[in-house]
Length: 426
Image 1 (cartoon, one colour):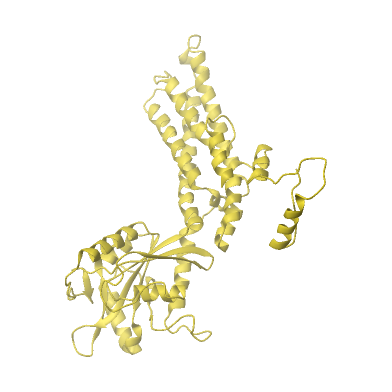
Image 2 (cartoon, one colour):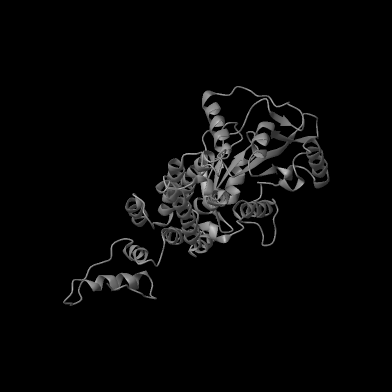
């Protein structure tokens, strides 16, 4: 089988592939099937299944951070780690099954209790490492699938305007009419190499909407459609990785004075997220000295919110048309803050862990469940007397090792071929 290597562009590759079928040869010439070279590399032990998944991520990468994460996960370290755990479990299981097989001839009182204690110690160590890998999977998935961002706040605070400024186009309808955004509007874009999905949601209009520290905004009549939009906004926020809480400068009711309008419920939802930021819009309507006073009063009313998470902006200014080096609306500063938050959300201590996929996480969870059952089975056991069911304990270790086999595609696992079919199809 001939593998084609060319340094030409798509047109060159297409021309060469078209000419292959017209070549004269005594042997049959055919095109390779999708994933065939990768499958052969796997079958010849050049790649393990974790590396194949990393290769797939490399080919499908759309952003720089996705590409870097895929390359980091392609070192083969994950496969070696999983195989090492599997060997540990096989050895532990061998000790238990030896006791089962020779139980009639074996004097339990002569059994070294440290042997089984060592098995428990190894199982506990593997479970701790699995916990690290599962958390790494969550962070790595943010890089692969995109970081989910929700924008929450009262009507007319500028959520849709900010979204349009960030993406550089009219992605969401902007109007002064309350309830203009009824459903969740999602937009994906690349920010400093990170794939992000912004969700512009319906304005939260309730008794928790405040101007300054007062509940003085009229709730008004909220229709059923707007109520559904608000419900969806809260649901979307609850599953987001980062929340942008929108607030805005509004008249306070006293002539010539303004305060910051925000929604307390939106702020409460945001503080439960791993990362959040409070963006105060319409700063352009006040002179700078007056705005500074209003901002200090706002910060004083919310002492639990760190000052660095409160960023004043103005959506009046277009980021794309701003003169070079100028950030009139402070939008560029907000984007830089978001990028720093993305880095915090996705940073891993061990770069090899970027290769932990959702499939691997699910198998690791199953493995951990079996190991937890083993620990529970032997929790109160007297190791010297072996007063626990050895057969059941060994079965838990066998099932856990089977899960690890499926991770790499090696060893004995009943559905390995099915897993390979799905992986290589993609």
